[in-house]
Image 1: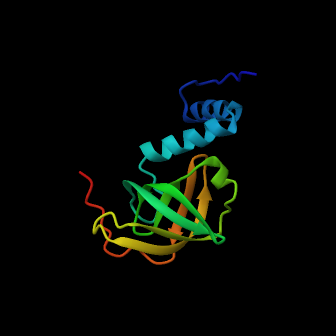
Image 2: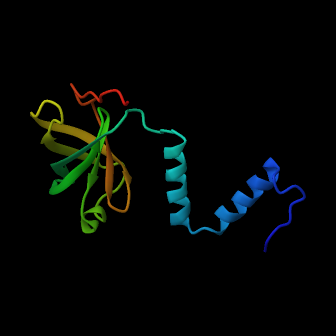
Image 3: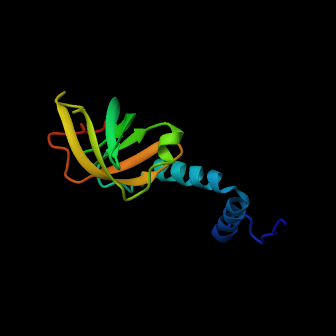
Length: 140
């Protein structure tokens, strides 16, 4: 059902139209829209800036060893891509131990953290302690 608005260019009419469209969207589309909007508006819910970083990682959850790929990293956490069947065995709040090469110093790192989110292609980890010596250069 389409609504009719007195002044099509008023802020309330435009806002109402946007809300109507969003309410008709499937959840996945809403989530993508939110992600796109927060990115374009410069809204960053992260405490630490992230750096793209493709690297093999081994991680242990519940005494089970897994392999994956780091997609991005910060001094406070990491996002790991992994197979779908692995993600089905993971839950937010689980402790995890990671081993990988430090992105700046190229030394081997072993660090602990907690799974903070799980998405379609992987999961986010918040480190228990900051990754020492990790610096993201100023963005131009």
